[in-house]
Every structure is written in structure tokens, then in C-alpha cells.
Image (cartoon, rainbow, N blue to C red):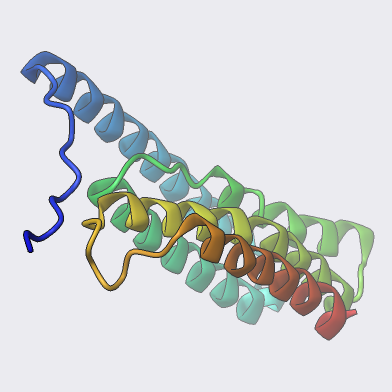
Length: 163
């Protein structure tokens, strides 16, 4: 018996590949510039009373940037502007005098709503590059319950644990 053939990608012209690569590099660069600006704002304008919160935000930014760089460089451009929306939570806490627990709950819920789509994109991209006969290639029918579980897990984690 002959082994099943791998999926053959359609050959594109060098100009098309260069165009897509340019878009990838451009979006990655723009995303990094936005992230660097956000890190600068976090470091410069977070009050000294919120140093622990600042460190937490910087760690989240670092993890987000590293993950995004991996996705951008290995697969396709994925921008990180949702990470930029994290900083206003600190300003809300300072100006509206929200309880730290409530503010962190808002943050966790925001992350819980953003994480499942990113995880789904990540799974989809990995499945696209897998060979047909790879043991890591899953059927679309199997991925639907997995994605549903991810959505439920993150929604329950954000809402159930911190509220």
C-alpha cells in the first residue's frame, strides 16, 4: 500500500510571497511599536503606589509580545492592540477609586474574552501546516468540542473565579 500524499500547497509567484511577507513584517513592526509605547506609558505614568500592579501589567505585556512575535514570525500577522487596552484599567482604578479586586476582575474577564479566539487561531494555524497523516492532525469535528471547551473554560475562569 502506498502512503497517503501530503497536502500540496499551491505555488505562488515570488512577488505574491514577497507582498505577503511585507504585510506580515509591517503589521508585526506596527504592533511592536504600539506595545513599546504602551510599556513606556505604563512605566512613566503608573503611580508609585501601584508598583505591584505595574509589574503585573509589564509581565502581561511581555508574555503577549513574545507570544505575538512567535505567531507573527512563524505563521501570520496577529496584532496585539488588545494588550494596549489593559493600561486604561489602571487609570480607571486611580480615577474612579475602584477596589483592586474589582479592577482585577475586569482585567481577568477582558483576558478571558480575548484568549479563546487567539487560542482558536493558534490551533487552526497549527492544523493548517500539519501533514494529512500526522498524528497531530485532528479532524474538524474533534476541534469543535475542543474550541467550545476553551471558550467555556476561559469564560468560567474569568467570571466564576474572580467575581
